[in-house]
Image (cartoon, rainbow, N blue to C red; front, side):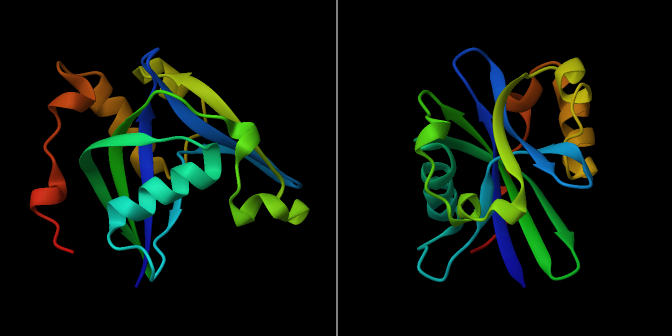
Length: 152
């Protein structure tokens, strides 16, 4: 099964970093930064740190594992992390080298139910999850850390 790691990246402005995907013939949509776990990654969180360095030249502090989603032959791990500095202009990920993949635009999105509703965040399951937990007392910080339940 392919494993992917992604991060809800909370900025000092209490916004979330999201990547707007603009591809020919496809309605624009947003995803949170992350990517595939490579065989050389010692663990999933190391893969996430590598992906954030590649995609937005950022360094993160992982807080917790929020969600694990499975579809077909892929498992995606969604982490909560903070980020203080980033530079989208300094990205180095291989996906940026292929013009056929369309454009990637980094945006700060208000970390509120209305902010998440204002974009077409994919997958829908993570969008719904964020809107739900952001409307509750304690928000994301109050969610259980699933790292204790997920092995490997």
